Image (cartoon, rainbow, N blue to C red; front, side):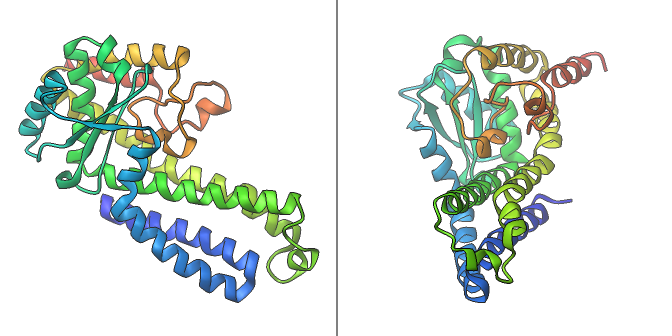
Length: 284
C-alpha cells in the first residue's frame, strides 16, 4: 500500500470523525459546517503541518556555520540517498531525540535535540540522522505529520465537547435529539480520540523497522544506530521530552515514558527488537 494511498485514507477517516462531531453538535447544519472545516483542515495539514510541528517544539533553524558537523553528516547522507538537502532544526531540550517532517523530499526538515548532539558519538549521530533521512526518502514524513496534526484536532474537539458537557454547554434537548444522546456523547469524547490513536498506530510501527534497515544501509553500518537506540531508550526513561501524545510517533524513539498499557499502545515497536534486527544485519 503506497504512502499516497495511506495519506488519502487517513485524511478521509479523520475527516469522517470531524464530521461526526459536527453532526452530533449541530445536526445537518453542523454536518455542513464540519465538512467545510474538515476541508480547510486537510488543506492546512497538507501544506503547513510541518511548520506547526516544528513550532510546537520550539525548533529553530540552523545552518552550516552554526552546526558544521550536523550539516556535514546530513549533507553526505542526503547525497547517498539521492534526495535534496533537508532543512536543519535544533530543539532546545536536553532530552535525546529527533524527527523528520515535510510533505516531500523537496520540502523536508530534520530536527534534533541539543541533548542528542551533546551526548552521542559521531557515528551514533550519523545512525540517527540516517534513520530520519530514510523516512524522508520513503516519503513517510507527509503521512506522519498529517496524522499528528489531524489527530491533534480530533483530540482538541473531543476535549471541547467533554468540557462543554460537564459545564452545561450542551443542552439536554441537544443530547436527546437524533444526534446521538448519551451514547453519542460517549462515542465523541472517548471513542473518537481512541480511533485517532489507532489510526496513528496503523501507520507507525512497521515504518520504523523499514527506516532502521534503510538508515543502516545509508550509514554503511548498523552499529551506530543500534548503539544510539540503546542510549536514547535509556535517556527517554530518565529525561523524557515533553511531547504531545498525538506527535509521539514522529520521533525516532517514543518521547513518552511508561509501561503497561502505555507500552502496549506505543506508536513505536520495542527498542529491544529494533536493536536485535539491526545487529542481525551485520551477521547476514
